Length: 430
Ligand code: BJ8
Image (tube, rainbow, N blue to C red):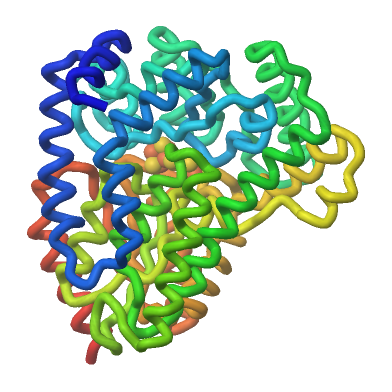
């Protein structure tokens, strides 16, 4: 499709064409520096390059085509919003988390300055009219997780059609019941929106697609145990980011192909960095596209990233909806129970207490052979900044060193972070 046809599409979506072009230009340069400059990339990374190059083009065209066929587009900011139900309603589910600070000044007219970069980013993208995903959505589903998001959604609702899903903050029986009720409420909302009655087979289909996607990333993550590391942390992060907005069936097929290539590479003893390169696990806040800052710094500091403990990483794919029980289920109610069981396992820092996250990080570090962990919290993110102390204590007890960093999407602190990370990596080597 010609660029001019995209322009027409972007105009119809009411984007600010000049500001949007400026964003794409920066994004393209950034991508070239961080991704295309890598040595020893997998051939399957062509898929990643293609998806990224068409993220505001072909993918948006696909969304418009889906809309023309009567399908609805649902945007979300959190892995608590059950994609299985969106798919069951034959709607399209896209992640809207934003990882760039374009539009921050505008965002600060609507949310306080001491709000995390992720929230300012999605607000800023909307106010600056530069996100064709947000503009394509029929409904944006928010959720009651952290206070920053909850309150930002109130302001955001003045600009987009919002639906808010309640997410519990603890994991008692009553919290399970609350999420179960919210699953049903979301399903009914989808039925109202799409005019489709969701049945057993629809939910089973949604579960199969979402589980398939999770299994492909689980397979990838298991392959990352190899030394030398067969794929860079940058590419692995990008795969997780793309999983939120590409077509899920296409994504799963492509990532499984990529895993075949990785298996062959491991067999030959090849990798993206020499055997013995210090291995690090990143843990903490989600890194939404195009936030590639931290893995880029880490991998330019003599280490390789072997895992991401975050919602754009293992937290989103670790647990499947029980497949045997799904196959046996004969009612919508049973399937909603199974979905609830799966979603209650999410170890977001918004829960209190959230001790399973501590165990999960320690287990991941061990399984992946990580010699150290970098805990990443966005500035002003209370939940993850608080948990950094507990994660550190847990890892110390296991003899795994941890470096806690707090940052945002700006580039001002890159040199300072590089110095700290290089020093941390040196301690791992000695
Ligand atoms: S399930 S991690 S996607 S809420 S960084 S906005 S927590 S102040 S993103 Fe999240 Fe769902 Fe939890 Fe995952 Fe608030 Fe922190 Fe900002 Fe955050």
